Length: 252
Image (cartoon, rainbow, N blue to C red; front, side):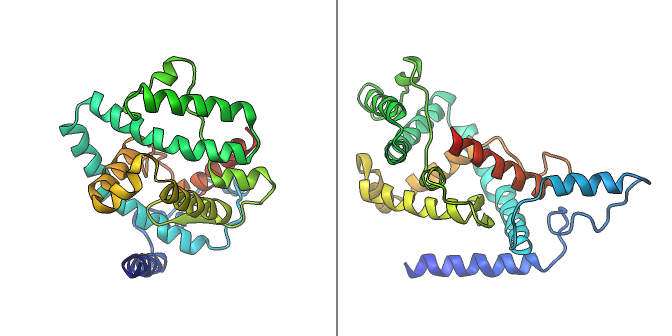
């Protein structure tokens, strides 16, 4: 536990340092070097206001956003490129299917907590088919049988029962979140450890390479790349899109 606390303290300190400095990437002070043609500044201000999200820790969040950018550029993306180079596509699909199958346990639990009967039955059937006939989840026959993956998490469960999102947060490594969804993340993580489906949680503690593979696989399946929006307002747009997507997921 002390190791994780020390790492957290180091990340927090790093983020504060970044938050107090102008960022070359335009994440911290996106408007400081920006000029507008006559008459366009009002439009930009109105557009920015339309994407307004409750973000009292914005200075801190922008620092963490920049920190995540550097981690992504220097660590995660090179790891993904190496992973793609040495691992054939069928094997990569198998790894993704396996970790998705583990996640379906939490999807089922949260679906049941939200009293979504039909969805819970579909997730149960999917979990059984993929675990038994998909060799522990390395294959995904359920999707071919008309049972696509349906995701639920404890943040959605809290939102389903009316818990507001609260302040927007950017978490080190994890990215956009809010107070409610961060709470949900902790609960889901703790539940996964307690359930220990297919003994993966215990195996991961003894074999950290499993956790590393899961992190690389997660990044491999996320199409977003920092800077791809080609705008100094990337942070604001990501914040707005995350908030709206979560609303849609909770309403689903």
